[in-house]
Image (cartoon, rainbow, N blue to C red; front, side, top):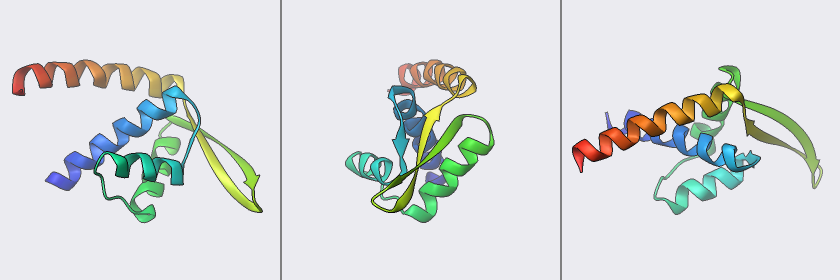
Length: 97
């Protein structure tokens, strides 16, 4: 159960940072680790791909140091979802904490 809860938190965190500007995988792994999430690329990249596939993120590719880096940005659908989840988080925090 805890894994599922944390995966939800990770998705929210990704949307939050994608709302601030473009993100990419390694950068997000470092960001998430700074908040105590031990996440592997085998967990993160499928999450990014699913958020893109479901229309919450868009992607552009750029060659950096000879490798293709995938940059993600939030979509309008992602912004709407993030705003909705923020309301739910506030409500939950007020009730639980």
